[in-house]
Image (cartoon, rainbow, N blue to C red; front, side):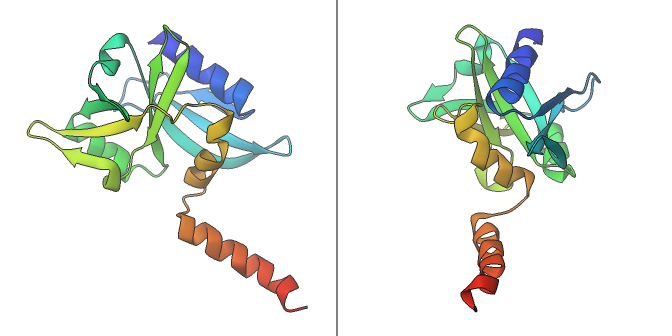
Amino acid sequence: ERKGIRLVDEAINDELCWIFREQPTDDYGIDAHLELVENSTATGKLIALQIKSGESFFKMKNKEGFYFYGEMKHLTYWLKHSLPVILVLCDVKNGICYWEHIIEEKIKRTKSGWKILVPSNQILNFNSKSKLQKIAENQTDYERRFHKLVMDKVWMNE
């Protein structure tokens, strides 16, 4: 588990140039927070991270990614959390962290709990920056475009 946490810490600090804060408490699975940084300033925009590492998390896969299976008590906690929550699966052997946003639309109920597909093309690195920013801002694509339109309206009317 420690190797996975270090791997996520490196990805957030080195690739994204954001702040990583480990949460060393034994709870329902919020292992750390990331905080966005803009123009060398912490923004207060946070994402909660559930970090999993180990080969067992990569056994259930298909061509699109890896299935993570969880207990309902954890899912309920994450969905009700005040921060957006992402699940990070760490392939320590290959030095890669895959992630997915824990939201209702991506959850599939099972007989014993739930599962989520963590895409194999969604790697915690610089290429994920805009997706993670959007998650931290709690905005859908529609909300983001609408906000941009409102902001652009000023110069459109000139």
